[in-house]
Length: 134
Image 1 (tube, rainbow, N blue to C red):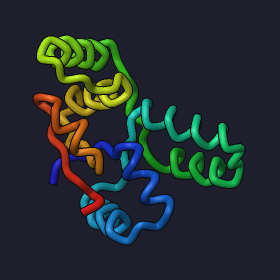
Image 2: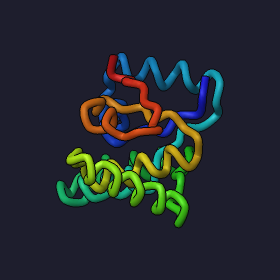
Image 3: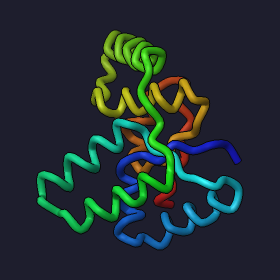
Image 4: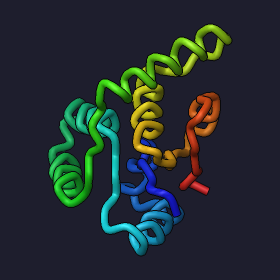
């Protein structure tokens, strides 16, 4: 099993207790000690929780982060994301900047992206995805 970068949607399902997603987390953690999310996912989750003033959920998420890994965005991952943006735009395939930044981090770190958003991420060349909602 390859290292996996957990996308924002899958992390949200996990915190809601989705049985399928929780099962994937449990299986993954039998091989790896920690879960990994991107700095972009960290931003999205924190922003959403603060906007809703969900302080209890915020505390739970912060505990999760302390026990796992937030994979940073580097100049290399930013360049990968920019190249993807340029290539996709030239082919009239528009993908959200947030998704491209997450993809750049996954590609730089040779990780599979666990996501339920196959429609958007499936357009990105060189990105390996697995749907952990299925």
